[in-house]
Image (tube, rainbow, N blue to C red; front, side):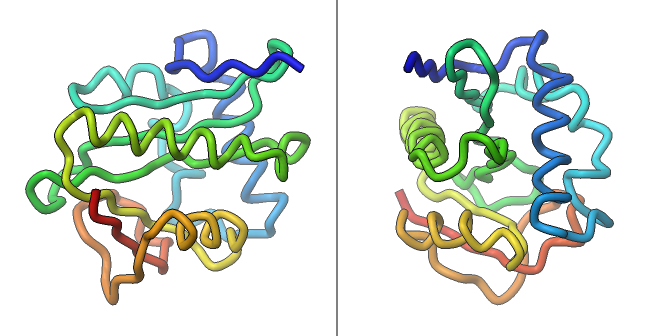
Length: 160
């Protein structure tokens, strides 16, 4: 099986938006105040042109399977970035692809000079949350930064 990890390209926008939104349906997660309703979800390649940001995608036999990235969200502490857009299509879960995407994103954050990574999530995404825990993220009592995703109620951070 041919697996490729690479940065997002414009041609990925539509498929990634579908993958991201499908995860909310798969896990029966409320969409208000989340990336589901965020207009940038349909134009991720443009969003990730920002300096010190990257969105990685995984292709399996040429088919997009998911994404994960690093973004310098406004309002975060100095030298802190947000781990964002961590979504895997249901057909590709449980194969370690999410872990690979996350590790690629964390490596990018380190190479970009970030000292910590922040995450916002929801308890319904329990598999992702358990991966965050295994990767050394610890819980916070309140959100950091201005992600605009008021629907999230789990906040975590990891020092690099």
